[in-house]
Length: 228
Image 1 (cartoon, rainbow, N blue to C red):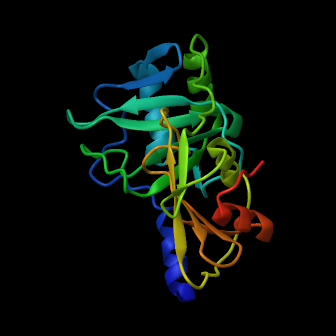
Image 2: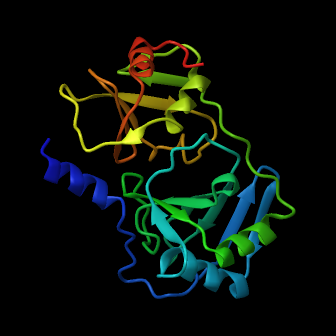
Image 3: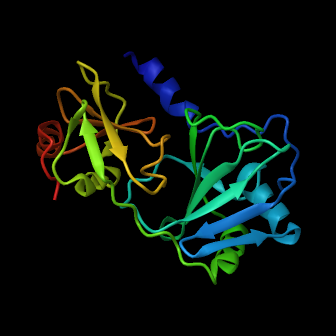
């Protein structure tokens, strides 16, 4: 793939779409959920939170982080009596991750993936609401398939979220899809999260970012062995 095409692919993940939505909280408000229940975020907190996250506030969109998966909360909302949106608040990363258009009445799991680094106001709201709620523990995949074949030690493949350096090179031969199955949806295991390993060479495709990884690690992934 030519450099221009790769640049366009990477840039697409940086566009948070807010067309057709006003700068206000979702009509039904937000819910923040963890392993022991949910808490409703009222209007006094919901409106500044929505502005911070989705409507030009202080939270900033960044690339998919190169970081070890961690405990998280689910942030839920809907617009216009539409489908339920589910984002993820990861305190250890100070980030929220969501998919597609935040103000849409429908949810497309194939939409662009957005990671937001939280500003102080959004972080303070979420921390306060989360006080009585336990975060959902780091997920543990039950199966992982590389190119349609099962790997050994599926949980070790979460390591692929914490390695690599971005590159504009596109490997020859394309990629093998890494399919993760887990009982718990998370930023690293839901149907929107994407991992693929290059058929040749030391390249990993993570969400929409191509990364260089250690050659030995790439060989281990293609061999479907444990990554510990």
